[in-house]
Amino acid sequence: MTDLIIAVDGPAASGKGTIARALARHYGLPHLDTGLLYRAVAANVTMLELDPAQEADAVAATDFPDSLMDEPALRSDEMGKRASIVSAHPLVRAALLQRQRKFAHQPGGAVLDGRDIGTVIAPDATAKLFVRATPGIRAKRRHAELTGRGSFVSLDKVLADIRARDARDMGREAAPLVLANDAMLLDTSFLSIEASVEKAIELVEGRRAEQA
Ligand code: CDP
Ligand code: CDP
Image 1 (tube, rainbow, N blue to C red):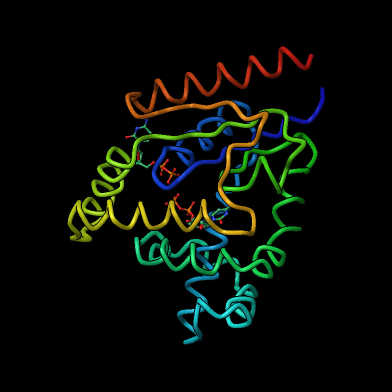
Image 2 (spheres, rainbow, N blue to C red; image 1 turned 90 degrees about the horizontal axis):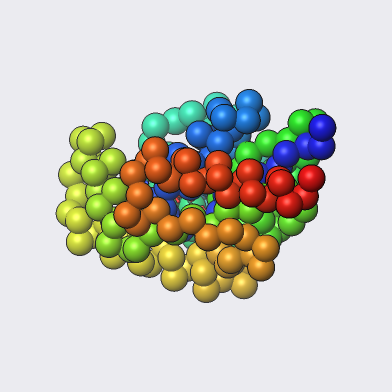
């Protein structure tokens, strides 16, 4: 059987991580949340007291210990924002590229989620999903997650952060968040988690059938 590489891209809180994890479980494949790599760089920049906006500072922070990726602090909104600042530097992206490509191209295949999986990391992926939802719905989801973890932040602030992050991730020169021309759109705005996962499996199966 040929390797199955599934690329899942999309903006913050669109549901891409939930869908990628479920696809990995369904197909028995390893999964990489590539956002965690950029969040780890952001956390390391902060620990080293460097400036995320300076490319050389951010590059120096790419040499982080793997254990950092398990830190709950990486999941804060502030770290998401700093991750989107460090991730705009081309040399930071270059430093993290091989690790992601190697993961995607392991025997059997893999599922990766992020912003540039279908465009840069694995343009040869078997199936590419672009997951989206309206900014208002994404803000409500992220707000529920953050308050559930005991972090008290207003819905307005979460929405403003999501809009700022979308603008930065879509507007940057280096590997912006764009719809790959062979990606399949999956709008989760009005779908439950279960329905989103079912739809994702259906789309991947459709692509596999075409390629068989
Ligand atoms: O889960 P959420 O979508 O909120 O964020 P994430 O996937 O953890 O990504 C955090 C930030 O890392 C994003 O806003 C992007 O700027 C950056 N990122 C990226 O540039 N490329 C990727 N493949 C993954 C994340
Ligand atoms: O990875 P990404 O930031 O795109 O989003 P996620 O972490 O998969 O999902 C963000 C939140 O939305 C999580 O709490 C999911 O459980 C929730 N979600 C949802 O309510 N409905 C969906 N159809 C998909 C995700």
